[in-house]
Amino acid sequence: MSKDRIILAVDLDNTLIKTDMIFIGLKSLFSKKPYLFPKLLLLLIFKGKTYAKKFLHDNTIFSIADIPFNKSVINFIKTNKQHYESTILISGSYYEYVNAIADHLKIFDLKVGTTLHKNMISMNKVVFIREKFDNASFDYIGDSVKDVPIWLHARKAYVVNPEKIKNKLKGIDYIPIL
Image 1 (cartoon, helix red, strand yellow):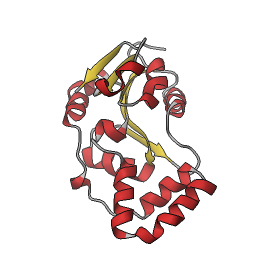
Image 2 (cartoon, one colour):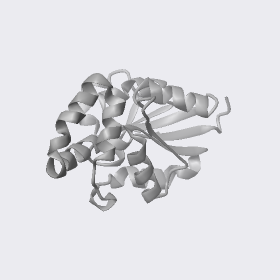
Image 3 (tube, rainbow, N blue to C red):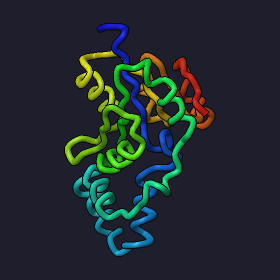
Image 4 (tube, rainbow, N blue to C red):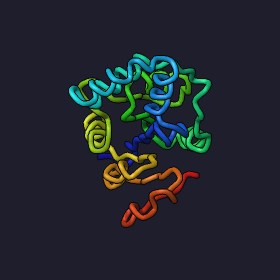
């Protein structure tokens, strides 16, 4: 493993954006197609989270312009991009949401989200990064307790608004991004 091979991996929900794509999808579903909510629940119960995420995406109407982006994270990526071999947007959100946001921002080399076959959360992110980049070191920007297992494997842990999870960050040497 070369020290020069370092990846910057960035979470989407409540990290790159100041909301969650599931929240945006649910809000859209409730306001535009509330009759589909029972179907969403049945999919979640009988098929699982990945099918529910796809269904929510397929029935969501949203505009990129309405998404509140985290300017501190975007500025961090733009300022530090040259220090990384690759920058990747990696999220548990459905991959089509991830693609749309990454394509809009044009600051990522790679974009990865949840598909029907893989929920891109927690250790699935670590496995993906290690496999895709031949065990290169990576830095990770995230925001939640669900990111703790990822930070434990990261070279550097960047935490958005660490105050809300400070008690879960014990033993993790992290750098706050406010």
